[in-house]
Image (tube, rainbow, N blue to C red):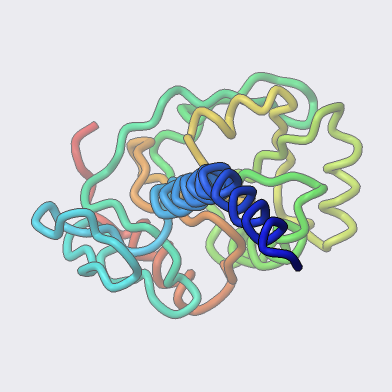
Length: 231
């Protein structure tokens, strides 16, 4: 390469440098935004920090020490978020398999496990038999599993799904509008809420879990035997 060619190459390199730096900066900004988005993405699972614990980053936050489910989010229930005090819920409306209107208020006086699911949700398929076993073991005058399907369309497909997975003890409830999903402000499927006798949320778990496990049974039994509180 001649001296003249070498000089021209250096000039092109200097001219290109600002553009290269600009592209690099943009990519870095995008990467930084992605990191922030992941770090602050909503997550409503796991132990909730106490008021003095700050932001409670990571899984090492202090365990909740109050509430009827305190200390019971362990083992198969480790991902459960325990509310330190019952949380008010908006009015939650859906329908039964015959299209009759239902709301959470219809179960006032019972502990409820509200499970939101869909036929296309693979984790829902995995956990549904365990939810059915939980209803079989503890369902009655004090407790009921209310499993609400959010598929679009009629009840035929979700009804077939329940039969297919062997969930024969669960009543079918549907919400084809999908409003229930947004009203409980969830971020994943399945989502399961533990609701006390006054219709307030005392626990939440996003994702599948073994609801027939000893830990799950102990948790629900604790909710059933918890002292009544004011509405």
